[in-house]
Image (cartoon, helix red, strand yellow):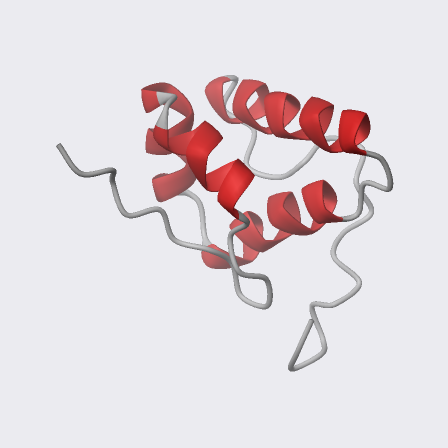
Length: 88
């Protein structure tokens, strides 16, 4: 069985570790598919902004939890600073 297609964001491509986490969590994946590309971009940027591997792993877990809880943007995140740019 092939893995589901998981779209990225507006500016950011979906990193492999976040893609794997979402693909393995049906509830989070359904919510991910329901939010806008701009909202997905915010989650991706938040994960990618982590400086340490442990922080990144926590943010990936929290992304799944927030999506399961119905949140459409990362909690306590000021927003993607790359949003206005044409590249990452």
